[in-house]
Amino acid sequence: GEIKNVCQSIGNHNSRRLIIGVYNCKSFFEAHPADGYPLCGYDEYLKNCEILGHEFLMDWVRYASKGNLVSCGVRSQIGSADSGESQKTVKNALQILYRGVINGDFKNVIGLQIIGRSPGREGFFLSHWYKPSGFRQMLGDVFPANSFSVAEFDFAKGMVFVIESLGRKPQGVITVLNNVIGNVLPQNQFETLTAIREIIS
Image (cartoon, rainbow, N blue to C red):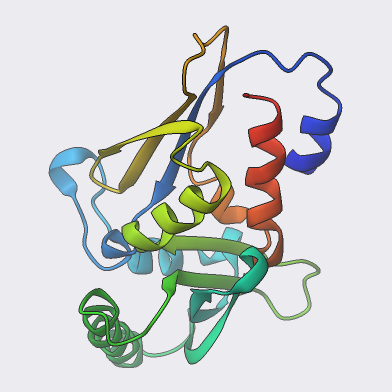
């Protein structure tokens, strides 16, 4: 079920340590073979098109009011059947935009949203690759510094955040790893994190 619904079914709200792992949009374009990631995210998705979808829409999203993630209106589309040259061209264009995102040319960008689908097949694949400062901003709004400590650790593909209530010893651990938050619908990510907050404090 949805994470927020699972959280509501948990009765005892003991103080818990929260560990969240998400993907860094930098690794959507950069492979890390020495760390066990031989392909960047872009190439990995195209390689796994039978599972994830034969058509991909990649859309830069910004962090808006009330915690929503909304489109910046800057998007690209590519399919597994497109030529290798077309796939390379789209990747290069996205990388140019990524450099603009990192340099602050696009305000409030939180990351890159990827939607995968296959014609004639029901459902879709959804993932988000985050700009570190963008995801930290959302975490800061859900877990304010006057009530929670947030520690960040980087790894080859992304970031891990360890969150604890200030002044309370954790009595357990909750993990939301492997970019699970990134697979939540963009309009529900803030409220999902808020639901998790209620069971760790």
